[in-house]
Structure formats: structure tokens, C-alpha cells
Amino acid sequence: MRNLILSTAVVALVAVGCGDKKDQTSLDSAKFTYVKGDVLVSGKPATLGQTVSKDATIEVKNNSMAVLQFSSSASITLKANSVLSIANLSKNESGKPVIELSQSSGASFSKIAKGQSEFSIKTPTAVAGVRGTSFELTVGNGKTTQIKLLEGKVAVIKATEGQTAEAIKEELAKADTVEIAPVSGKVVVPESVEKYATGAATSASLTDAAKPEVKKLTLADIKAKYGRIAKIQTKNGKEYVGYFNQQGAEMTIQTVDGQVRVPVANVQKVTPMN
Image (cartoon, rainbow, N blue to C red; front, side, top):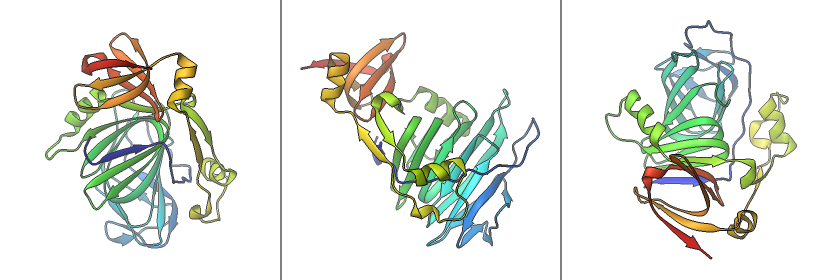
């Protein structure tokens, strides 16, 4: 996809707070569990513990940071010089939270509990649909979108003018899924990062924590583990190299960047490699 970069390295931190208890029929607000520096909500200063609702716009100025908690299912850390709007906060028919955000600039780090919510972020160039994931998203000058996936699954489609929420949902359901799983490598998380991820640290600056170290598999590792590798080309122009396994209508490809799930109907060509 043009103007989209996926990586397994991540430079992001998250502080998880406890959101207010909501009723069983609606999810109408999110709560600030961390505010540092100059943070605005629809033009007014944000405060710790403040709730924000649908249509609110959060601006995080220079040398500032904020963390929003959405019930108990998801949180997002907004870094300096970022702008985020809340497009939708609701619940689906099964009672799970539906969280739809729009990020026009800056960097954010999201942590979403697996199977607990429908979570998506739209940028000027892409839409990321999340399925139990920790990832960083950066918008560069409104022209590029970079996603750094630490663990879990994310599906990405191109953003187009006039996309409806229902159309986005349908496209994301059909899109290729990139997955980072234990088989794709070892993720070493420094203690300082782990404290923030569990809410154990409350006073030190989030930016003081060290970067996680991600050790990826090589193609040689994949071939040694599975016995074969191949080049898989899709009808929409994407190309993956690694071990593949087909189950029903879906093909799972183990690459050096993690697992990718592709509908078999979308596969153009498979070329074995030595």
C-alpha cells in the first residue's frame, strides 16, 4: 500500500488507568488517566480524570503527552504534537465497545484487549483495524502513515474520501492481516516499560523508559523451522516471502516481520524458493 510502512520495532509506552464503570448499553466517554504539559480538548485545557465524548478533538502540544482510557478494553497514549478526534464511542449488538478514532497528525500508542472491542484509527492515508494489539501509529505531514506493531493483529486499508463507517468495517474484514505472534521472534520488554504497561509506575516521566528490543527471525530460521519457504504474490500487488500454510479459504504466511493472513481468493502466484 502506498504511503504505508509496517514494522515490528516499536518506540511507544502506555499507562493503563481504570476507567469509570459504564452501563451495559452505551459507551459514551473516555477518561484521561495521564496528562502532562499542554493538552487541549476542543480548545480548552485538559485535566487528569476528565472525560471526553464523541466529536471531541484532543490536541497534544510540544513537550506534552496524554493517555486516554476507553472503559477496560483499550487505551491510547498521545505523544507530543499529535491531534486526535473521537468519531464514535458506542457498543455493538453483542455489547462490545466500538471505538472509532481519527488521527490527523503526530504519534500515538494503542493497547487493545483481544476480543474485547472493535477499535479502529483513521488517518489521512490509511485506516487501521485492530484485533487485540499493541501498536504505534505515526502520521507524517498528513501524507504518510507508519504503523509499528509490537504484538497482536492489525488490518490496514487505504483511506479514501467519503468512506462511511460501514464501508470501512466491511473493507477491514476482507483486508490482509499482519500479525506479530511469539513464533515470529522474541520480544524483550525492559522493566521500565512493563511498569507503565501494568500501571505500576505513576510518577516518573513516560519518556524516560527504554525502548523494547525486538529480535526477528530470519528467512534461514523460518526454512529451518518449517522446511520450506516461498514467494507469495497477491492480486492487489503485495508480495510476501516465507512459509505458508493454507487452511480452508485463508492462507497464513510466516514472514520475518510476523504472520500475515491472506484470503486464498486474493493469491495470484506462489513460487517455491530454495
